[in-house]
Length: 403
Image (cartoon, rainbow, N blue to C red; front, side, top):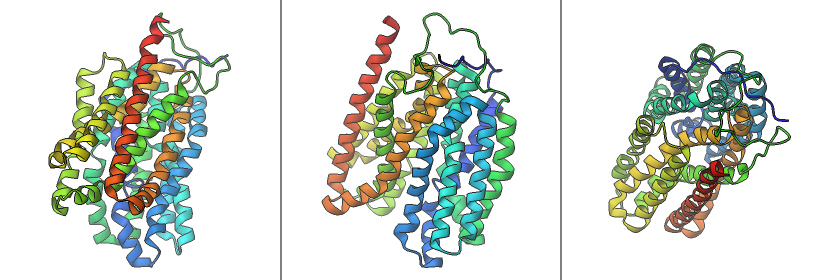
């Protein structure tokens, strides 16, 4: 038998959601987005190979992906509050080790520790925690958190650059470690409800019963194809993050203009999330999935076929990617329900994170072999696959109530 759903909690608050958004800004700034600013200073200061320094992030993502199902089970059993607080503390420890690393092996070990912390404190475990705690009320909270954290790059890249100039790359790591330990952990303790592990709950409403596994453990019906759908979207996002500036320059866009065009992604993502919050509350999340995959696909079509309209392609990509962040939290909650949600989120996180870990190396290899134009066309092919998979997921979701 499957475990019963956890007891319903009080509704999430705007202040709590804003606090959780701040946690994600600080944690993403100190992990995923850190090396974009610190890589060159680290290489110049240590002489370590640039490929190894930059590739350390892929190592952390790999560790995070491998641990995600285990983290999901811990959240399901114990609730999200202790798991996310522990994850933030592990990130702080990893950043301290990063700052103190005397050689490359120690530097890579620090990123392994960071990967452990990332598995327990970033979007996927946070969404698992609030979904398990709040049930259907979590959708608005997820969107509000995504809106707030959408400013992570806008805020953290300039801040990290300033810190490197002021205290060096090692001091920058220590600053982010302090923020994780003394700002993020208290915010998690305050904003996340206590005692939201598996427990008794009222039966689901008629007509809204989630998919369940007879054994109480996954994979659940349709979970594998949803994981592949999320993975293809995550691969595109990672590839764009790594290669967009080079692709635009290969299309004849001046370097300064390419940077300005890339800056359109952030506002587009946040704008899409605001629209979802205002207009999408009553719609099934599968429609947001279709908007996300379709916008990304159309944006890449424009980049391939009409580079003169690159600004429009980037805006459409930003809209789709902004919706993707929300969909990966709201759609599994709708399909699988509150009781199994944390465990499902942990399983669904593994394949996308493994895809993200492999994407930078794959993109660099393919670009070196075939050129950036062919790489962009391959990215478009993955986007078309993502649209097709999204249609299959949507068809199953629409048929399920009738069945």
